[in-house]
Image 1 (cartoon, rainbow, N blue to C red):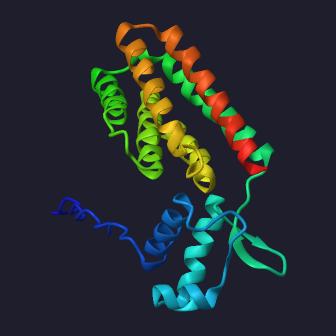
Image 2: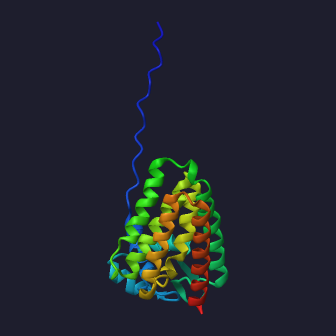
Image 3: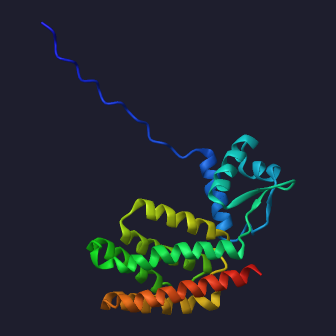
Length: 224
C-alpha cells in the first residue's frame, strides 16, 4: 500500500535584523536631518570609523545605503560628501509631493475612520506643541501630519514613493522651520484641521497647495 505524500513542515524564514551598517546609516541620517552635517560636508573615513569604532568596510556599507537614498554622493577626487540639492531637485520633490498629497485630500471621503482619526490626531499633536518648541521637533511633527495624509491613499507603493522624495529633503528640513516660523506653522495647521473637520475639502486642498508652494520657494531661496 502506497502511503500518502507526507506534508513538509513549513520553512522557517529568519527575520532580518538591523545590521551595524544599518545602525550607522540611521545615525548619519539623523545627523544630516538636524543639520549637524551640512550639504557639501565631506565624510572622512578615518574620522567616522573612529567615531563609530568600526572597520572601513562596515562604514562603507553604511555609506552605500545613504548614497542609494540620495543623502550622500560620491564626488570625483573628493570621496563622499553630503549631497547638495539643486533648485531643480527641490522643484521635482515638490511636484511629487503635490501630486500625492493633494490627491489624498480628494480621496479622503473614502478613507476608513481610523485613517481620518490618525490624520486629525497628527494635526492636533502639532498644534498642541509648546511655543518654545525647537525646529527639529516641529519638523518631525509636521512630517507626521503629511505622512498621515499620504496614508489616506492606502497604498504601500505611494507611501514608499513619498518617503523616498521626503528622504532627500532631510538635508534641507532643518532650515524649514526657523523659530520665527513655528507660530505660523501652528496657525496654518490649526486652520487645516478645522477645514478637515468641517468637511471643507476644497479649502483644505487650496490651503495645503499654497503651503507646499511657499515651502518650495523658501527652500529654493535657502539654497542660494
